[in-house]
Image 1 (spheres, one colour):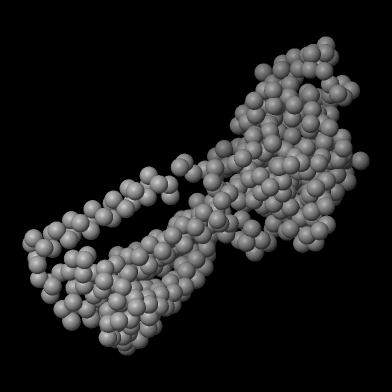
Image 2 (cartoon, each protein chain N blue to C red; image 1 turned 180 degrees about the vertical axis):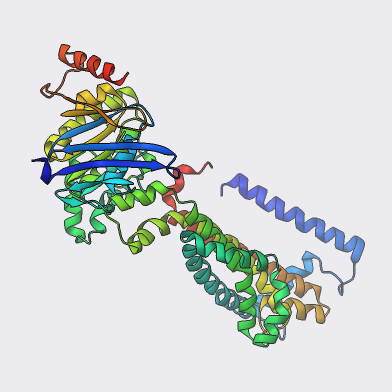
Length: 260
Length: 246
């Protein structure tokens, strides 16, 4: 980031905070309904430092990330492996398609009651919601990635002696579908992170960024609520950055195809 | 002598539920070490014939035998080089060339040594770590050639490999191909629709009729190499083949 961009960045955030601050003092001016940045920022610091009884933000972030990874890794494993098979074997795809299309439009939040009934108020229940939310982008992108592989690559591999299905999968299908899979991974991660908050709001565990938002509301402390909202945004941004970096390093062979 | 190399017997093929007749009773022998061109009008079925020899497609009638053994599927003894190169974009030049050795489970060290030899043969030194999208058309075709040659095939099947190149690069690649062919002593079956290319490269030119493809005539090219495209005999042979084609 050069100096000019840095100035724009600071100005952008600064004006957002300024409008928010002014809006609060003119129209709200009630600490039980909303908090201005001048109150959120100190609260945010106190939450990070553990100065507020019953709230310790780093621990909550760790719990939320735990829920996220628990659900998301299963979604990646299932989405990628089923996607490879369904993308390659058209019959499997045709079989799965109606099921996918039936379940996919159901919002992950709608699964929360069933998840709690089945799995009780556990970390697994949270992970299940996250799994439901993130498995479809990964699955569908992987299927798309595999089924859009150009036939010439398969034929080239065959004529060069890769006659075993295993070789074709490992040496052609997986690398060729990597860009689409990684897009699915990034989109899926975004959905997964949103689902973390939704799942925790329902109290599946007593720690977590989402749970503490709800707790903050019960305490009538909008400064705590907003601090945790910001934390969710910051961690989400960080996760997205990780996947973008991963994407750029794995598919560097594709650089020439992208118009930037 | 043909009996123990490539023999094509009564080969026929139809497409689209038998509506489109592509190959009509093809009989052809190709000798070891020979450079044979398949020449014919576009869409006549010469590529289909090549793909059947490669094992990428199945014939409806007849058979293809290599050294007495019937061809049933693709294999490293008949490697195909495609018109649009079909290099793996996710692999570097070296990675592409190593492909055929990896699937044969050859030890990394030895594979690298073999690959290096062919990189030298096709003049690609210094580009080992480039990705295909960074290369020109001519260089891509060199990679494709090296990638095929490391498999040490009995026959190299080339499907209009130079058609996408500009005229100057194409001429240069043609002489490169002759050089590489004499260095490796491979049998090459080469599909083209350019008469000049066929005459420049081949020992024999197989002329096909329009679809369904039948062998119309086989022309032997006795001009010694390196061939001069403007020599009298070259031009005369071109004219003779032109007449056959039209």
